[in-house]
Length: 289
Ligand SMILES: Nc1ncnc2c1ncn2[C@@H]1O[C@H](COP(=O)(O)OP(=O)(O)OP(=O)(O)O)[C@@H](O)[C@H]1O
Image 1 (cartoon, rainbow, N blue to C red):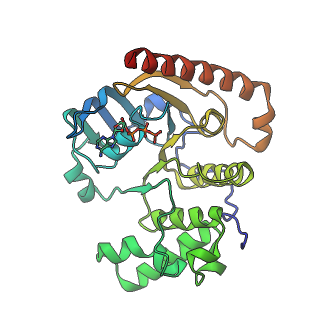
Image 2: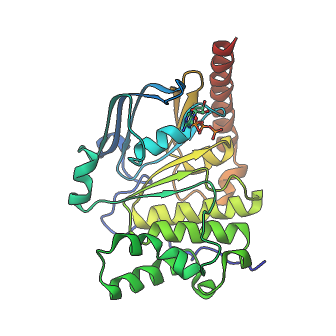
């Protein structure tokens, strides 16, 4: 397997940029507003009940909870990929149909890299732009070059997915999301299938990109450690019905370098989030008795 890494991005944001690292989040503009959202699937499963949350510009928010508590359902609704059964979802304080007109963009990174196996990395990465048709050919090539460079895959652009390690396939998947130059990045457990070392490295790289690009990120994970390491806030969900039951602010400065993982502050937040997760899991089990 070939090895590579995301391009090293200076952790300092550009002058004037407001990132989750710097500005109290309450002062920032809402990017996502989930207001009393229920989601009932056609088979009667109540995947979400009364979900309420706001994600503000530049925040890094994780969704954490036991299997089946509706994390992916909520993320898909945030992506405009599914209707709500009740309540409403707003993007940049507007309806989904208006978002395109404002020039703001969201991108979704799935749990699996979902690359086309018969296509080389470059062709996989250009897929959103080919589907979009609105960019000029020169701009398309420039966006692809930039995205590949950002994730450190420029020299592997002519490789097929099977020639890449799992971590590199996820990098290609992230590059594909970046070609549209999103303001909002929705990531559904992107590193769950990777070994711990690769996951830690990708966590660092995504954080560096987040700070440098001034993204807003919502990140689904099963890992308490990953959630604490990455996030400004961890939103904890319970199952049956899927709902938001807790929220923990990780009040630690960025950049969060690997030393943070072995600090007492990190251990304290992990304990706090683990306890919240245990309470949430117990709520789901009570409901199923
Ligand atoms: N298309 C669907 N049709 C019917 N039920 C569904 C559908 N998608 C999800 N569900 C159900 O909705 C509930 C929430 O599922 P969801 O995948 O959102 O949870 P999750 O927290 O992301 O789970 P996991 O952590 O295991 O990925 C589960 O009971 C699941 O079985």
